[in-house]
Length: 625
Image 1 (cartoon, rainbow, N blue to C red):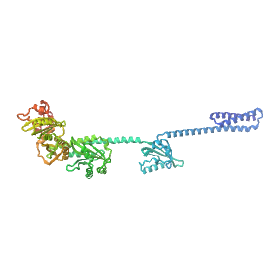
Image 2 (image 1 turned 180 degrees about the horizontal axis):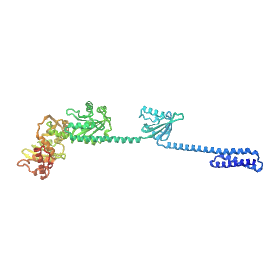
Image 3 (image 1 turned 30 degrees about the vertical axis):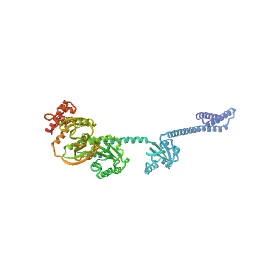
Image 4 (image 1 turned 90 degrees about the vertical axis):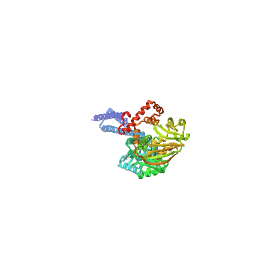
């Protein structure tokens, strides 16, 4: 029995030593080294006892001790394993924390923590990039440090209510950097709830989106401008189509103003001219604005000599003026009507002006996307349409305005020739050539034909002169005028030139303008090119209905410029007289063409004249087109 106890004790101790050595090797814990040494000594002692032959029942406590020691090793091993697992978990969490902190430290977003009162307790380095402040400058401060004043108190109250209720606030905010510049920030604020369920901290993540916002705004602005441009182009197309169908100037003006007032970003539009008797602005047509408001604006424009309308008419250039950059009374009144910018578009045809189209908008940047050339082309198109209507009305209407005026100074070859050669000139006929020049036939009295030709050869505005015929003291000349002249200026306004008599360097002119025509514009155009103009009379006349006028209108539509010139030159040169005063070859020489070409033009012109008189209601045949 004693031997069994001894051997059992020794066996347990050996098992304990081996197990302890294995654990020591496995976990390298000093506690297992101590147990290993103690168990080794105890085993050696037990073995020594066995060798001396003195074992006994007294070895039973040693066996019990061996059992407890082995159990201690076993449970210590389990404890060490659990402890190692805890340490591994702690190390893993610490590693994650270090990684998380490193990520926060290197993040491009500004991240900071605050306490429940909003005081910043932590900030990563990116705070400097977003706010301009260093992390040491913001810790202990409140985020109101970069408050821009862009948002009202209600904005911040709503933000605090959200995060204090435990919800996440996300939105965009305008902050002010340390250097005073404004920056757009995408901000997310999340509450951190403590163990007791109350919010004790907040974490905020800020991202600078200024450049993104600018790009977005730039794209939005480009889209807005493109939309405005598309609307304007649609208006221009609609206006062009309407101009073709219009029968009167009033219809043209009403159509144009209505198209602008009913489309795009434009609030209202009107067409204005300057009064003949006074220098005040006189609206001719308007849309999108009541007469009382327009009258108020009219007073504001009349008080300013440099208003956009006057400048546009005077310089023949489009004037786009925001109210914010203009002085005077009219910007104040325009803003009071709800608009912030105006475009004044001159309506012109050649050198002739028909006032200005004024377009108002409540967006002071609406005109920036539209090239001034678009408005300029529109103004010329409208001017051309008005000129065509008035020219037609002058020929066809029974009611005309007769203007009689005197040109005192030079400015045209006829007055200067009269003064230089002490002769008189009477206009017989004018013919356009289609290349910006004009053929004028004058009967000259009191001057030697050679002197007239010498004067014309040295006059810059005359490219050619031909003596057509001579009858005693009177000589008929053909002048090719390349510069501005009275007939050309009046023609641009659709006026019908009735008479020009030039004597002593002064010209007395009689012309017919359609009723409602812009007399002031005619006189201003004449004065700008021909010096001092004296209006002798202005009469409203009822012209008797004459079939001849209808025939002339029909012929003007059918004859080409060359055909008309051939017909008129032949008529004035006596080609149709019997016997002929000039031959076809002589007439062709005057025109600067061959005889065969002259005869071809003349035959076609004669056919068209016969068709217009004998068959006025029949359509023009293809052969005569």
